[in-house]
Image 1 (cartoon, rainbow, N blue to C red):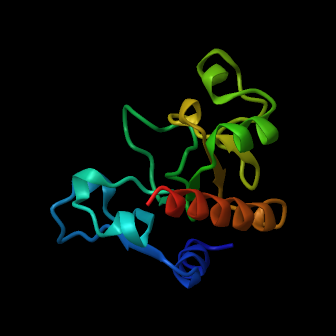
Image 2 (image 1 turned 135 degrees about the horizontal axis):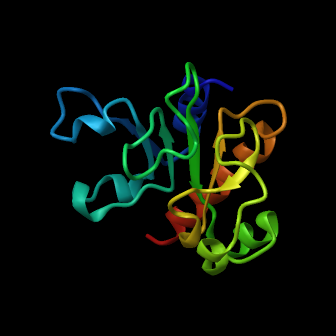
Image 3 (image 1 turned 90 degrees about the vertical axis):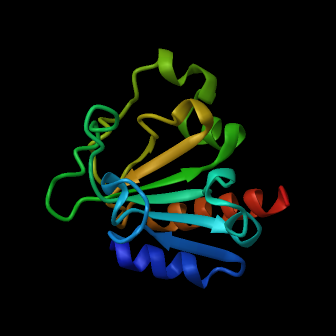
Length: 153
């Protein structure tokens, strides 16, 4: 799955708004090109009051989030807020233990579901450059995350 395919698929879900940060926006330059998926109710809130249910990140954030090595040619990461139960089901321990655990997979591994390197403790999972191994599960996780987000409004 390419970055564009994932964004197009997300936009096809009812009630999903995807915003890709443009260079001419007020956002910091490091965020340019990254995409944020919201349920429609969240997207209507002021920017400082909304939280995405998924993101597509295209580069490393120096000094903060570099472990997935996203600066490799054509590599990106899809991040999904799956919540405590789904995280525990897929990873084998609850998000609250994430900072004390060593992930089973290297966070730079392609096409594997991993705890988000920075937000795992908040119930986020990630997939670096999803492919045949993860595309079906990733779509399911994105649908579930969207439903969870929409149910809050």
